[in-house]
Image (cartoon, rainbow, N blue to C red; front, side):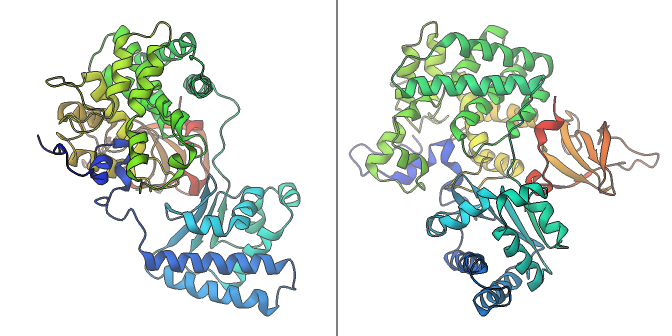
Length: 488
């Protein structure tokens, strides 16, 4: 069988990794996923210079060589890096510094004081744009040495820097979770809290209560049957601090949306959604160092990773009122379509079709999420990568249905139109996947719209030309936009 390891041969750790959809983004064949060593060294030098200037700003006057020299050198590096691009980004996710979506593990450990300084001032992202001046850098450093309470009184670090006349360096706050949810957002938040409780109970050695989990799954099923795209858009929510919980809810929603498209009855959707919600509960048995470690695991560590479906199924078997189907999909969600993966099934046995649904949802959400050890694919690139694994990891027919459901631009994607308007995709167009429905949120002059206007991007003018069309996808963080505020 293709991909099967010969009995008695050495364990091929990369083969094991290939079969784990949650780790697709950090294998050698994922082009561009690991920064070149030279570029990593340059970025670390830049961070060292900025960190040094910030520390010295508290000790010396602004014009002192201890400040001026590192800033001069930092500008030289930035100018060189920005020669072939408009901007570059530096941010923090969890306690990890991230450069252009590439985690900087060593630099994060070395420059913990810088990470903490950014956190204290609620700076989640720094965007350096081509054409920045030395004075821009100095004012940036000054802002990061200002007392956090004073910054808060002035409207935050982004407003303070903008008030200093700096437009080539943009600061953005971390994407915050909304305190108030209504409609589908309330359903999502409810599911998140119940999932968190169930996983924490299992972590403490207790048997999780199934009644609440079933209740939130029923709520998601009702929402999917009523208007799946409103709930589907919330899977764009990515929490870097609580990945396991958000990932579990996202996988459940994606699985339910695909199940609805396949025409599964409501009772089946409830079983599918419950298994998907708890598919990763077996990860509670992982030591913390495995969760955060880059995917260069030794054989013993991979043994622990590969056992989480079995451990998870064991948890569900002890939960009252959980049927055998939900247990089966948890056990099989890492078994590939070609039977590679883990655990090894009995001879002649194939994974349940519902397990294959969860495998697709799991792989897509994992690929599109940035974690401390992996870069995130944008949705289009994630779908392309999954197509390359069709017939191997993923069921080809189910994957085709999943892609039809998502569209080229998934619900929740922030896009710029040819009119310079900003919009959020709200529904795919089944007849023209490149021209979905979208909700306008900013006009062509960059002004926030008071009312939300829904537009059909497949609409044409009298000459047969599209009135509006997508020219680019936009990172919501750069625009300080919380997508969930515009959905539901």
